[in-house]
Length: 426
Image 1 (spheres, rainbow, N blue to C red):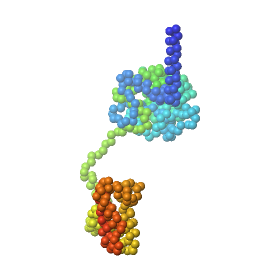
Image 2: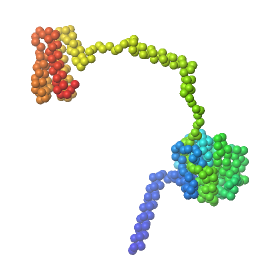
Image 3: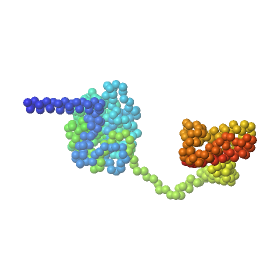
Image 4: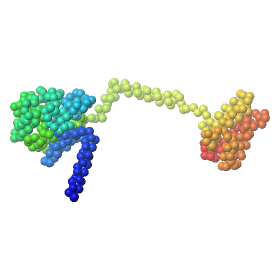
């Protein structure tokens, strides 16, 4: 009974793990991360670190050129001059050969700035997705050769001998005893230009060469299976990598560079400068410009300080200036019109509306009764004086002169200001 329950428990755990694995594969869309796939190089970094060699990935952060002994530059782009566009169908997408889009200019600058080991492409995307190294998943030979031909690393297309497995040996000191085993080998042409020598190869072609570039010497590998996760499991490739890479790095850092930017710049040398160098900016023809600017500045100062003088003050800038001007304007209207009572009432009504808005709210309007009640609760004496001035303004004596009416309006304005001040308004 106990054994049966144990088997049931194991079955349930296995089912849960299978469902979790399926869900994980579904979420990640079936894509294998490049560096962890068969054509990646995480295994190479791990292998080097186990031997005490400092090896790490580049993260596009500026580094000191002297601190890096060797840059490993895998090329995952078979057309450096064209931007990659994903095909519509998945079948066509798996046949593509561009994994990391990079330009020819960037590749060339990387070769000129650090000691570099550049690696050619070989497999289609389907090989990374499936994890199977089959000849049907190889990149077309012309496409695999193109990035090296564009950057002058290769002078002829690669060759693929009709052998399923090929073993190549070291050809220069101290690599004579090293061997590299390749499946479906992809090699440089046996004939090399004068600026290149074979490092590992044979009569059928070479897998690794050393060339003298425009600014520094670099190494190149035609078959990425020599160093990638898939190739390290073949023959003595792992042991060869453990010997060759630290030797090329000369004890410094080995940097795996999958970035598409140039993050290393050689220090620039500048000639010493002196303050006297600035004098050339005051010689001809710059002197004409300086004279013109000086004349323009003098003209601006003269126009602002002498010709126009200080700003005019049309009014006495006191707190009551605006109110006095307003009252005088209304008095002028009273003199020009015969319907004085209507104008006075309109003015007083507008003033009541402003006071009601300030004290009672914008929706109240000119409501003398509510305004009086509000002021009475706050200050009864002030409310009484305000109502008296309001009544006097609305009912001036018969035959009152313009001056008398103006006095009534000024008294009403004064009481209105007291009301605003009482309620903390301006």
